[in-house]
Length: 198
Image (cartoon, rainbow, N blue to C red; front, top):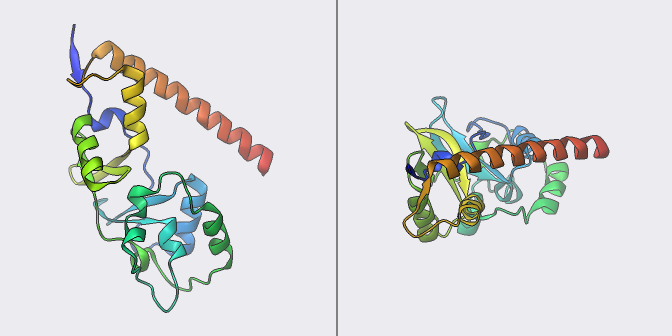
């Protein structure tokens, strides 16, 4: 029986929304709202990651102080996976005056990333050591995906992942089919909710 070592590219979310440093904060708010995400990677024109920006960064913005001071907010892209800031973000998005401020004024220029070919063990080790819940995945220096702790836990639970971290090729194909079916169901639910609440 063929075995396969799980890699980042096997479990990452591949459809990653990125923004540029010159993106306005108003446009960033629209991206975060439209895609229902808490944060996004910031990339240069060659699609290389140069930082991250999150809802917490927007909440911390003031015209007088465009750079964040609190270290915990600098890590929010990597640590806040459940959207604890949603209500405050919605209020700030409606009420704050962002003027001509752009993503580069509030982003965190620190990228914590792994390679698409890194094993699930390596991803878990990085997350544990850095005390984070989300990792940017890159290939050839370009952003190609995101992996969260929930992605890893889902695989561990679904496959009864053993200590040797090897699974059969058949199990990988089965998992991929189940994940694709789950993604279609989620998209269908989102469409239904959009129709109801529009």
